[in-house]
Length: 213
Ligand SMILES: Cc1cc2nc3c(=O)[nH]c(=O)nc-3n(C[C@H](O)[C@H](O)[C@H](O)COP(=O)(O)O)c2cc1C
Image (cartoon, rainbow, N blue to C red; front, side, top):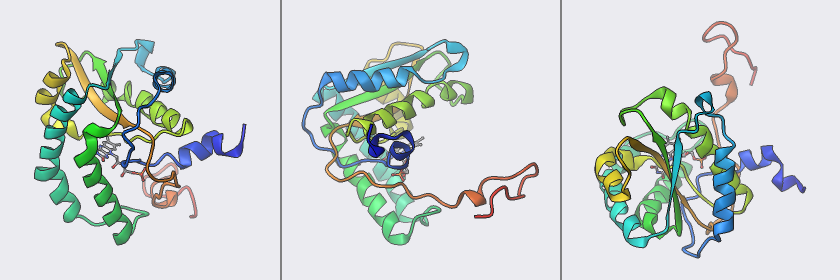
């Protein structure tokens, strides 16, 4: 095993990869990503997750319309009017915004999507249910990275969840939590940028720093 496949290195370089080539991705790799998802922690080991692999261009195109509508109406203006997050800079934030816009316009061109769903609940925000699907989603993002594939956790479609879930043909009682567009990346994997841990980790009492820097 080389250094680049070390777990910590993989985590450090699992960035949101939003510019993807339309080239097909072998089913064997998608299977490995799904297997990684299924290794994740989940409440009671109930495995109420369900995964829909979408390759059908017309389904993706229909969903993209709603994804773009949410960008035009909410996300684009929000990016344009907000300050860079911790660890970023105005230039980096601008580039992030450009990439978000690019993915919005090319969402349907990613060769494969994995739609992460859960059976149960009522489709309203539920911390317990979310906690049983997002570990699987993160495992899949890490697995994609380890296999040289790019992806991004996307959930913007939830702004139009009802319409999108109808297009996806989800049965009653099944709700989507994330869509992972997957493909070979156009750019390179690089380190993620985050604010200092010392600002967000406390010891015993809220506000008392655990780390010096
Ligand atoms: C709950 C959640 C929802 C997200 N939804 C979207 C999305 O709809 N579209 C998108 O381009 N990125 C989405 N992201 C990706 C974040 O923007 C990304 O993780 C963040 O910018 C950090 O990127 P980095 O790891 O490359 O630094 C989402 C991330 C999370 C955790």
